[in-house]
Image (cartoon, rainbow, N blue to C red):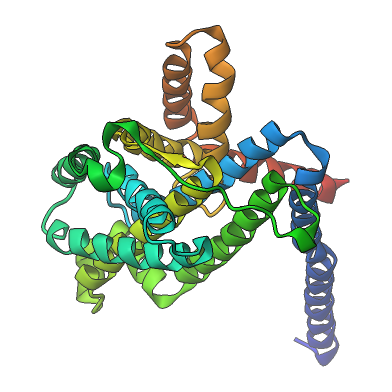
Length: 343
């Protein structure tokens, strides 16, 4: 082969590499632009919608935080839990009791409840390491059944079956915001921080080890991955996110009762992870939309309709879109990108 041919091929390769790099540079700003647009829209929401819609979107964020924790355990860790509603109850009642009975300022209840539920998750995660599949589901299901009964049993502290009212955080006068706007922005800030922490956790060494244990536990252990400690921490993180969501729930609603944290809530949360997309950071937010809006819309047709509609949607997603709504959006975005590239 002559030197001219070698030089020509080298030049073609450099040209191709340069073209690919140029395409990447041109495509690179789009994710950032999309994220900036979504952030701007999220911040403008409370100023453009009526208070009830702002409340609904605030609850989407609250549910999204709870699902973010459950997704760490189910989607990334491959462990099924039916007790997530119990940790929500611990966070909600912890915040309500601290603000009403102990006079603790509401901002301080958030880290306290986060630490409390993190410890509870670790306590449950350690013995649960010996269980998997339906056995683990039964144990966590039992936790979800017992916690509301315990709340009713200690009625002098928790209010029993009648529930417990808690003051809703008021907007500081210097902000000039209405209370619903302040609560939305407050929950939005917590949600952004929660999603950022979850993303870093998933991309960290611990997150990769957790995913490896989900795909092939035997191979992961051979490679030196300590699955027991990682799975225990996954329970702790999952419970902590639920506790944070429960605290925010108490702030937003201003009332907590055992009927709000029944075992049905745990089942609905697990279903929302499946519908939103297990293993995806976008899935919990879509699952929060599912929990908040689907029952509200279906309720207009009858009391039994929300359950029927939710069940049908779950079956459709599991059968036709196993990656959930987040996977469906990724496929749609990929199709649009390929179409734009061809154009």
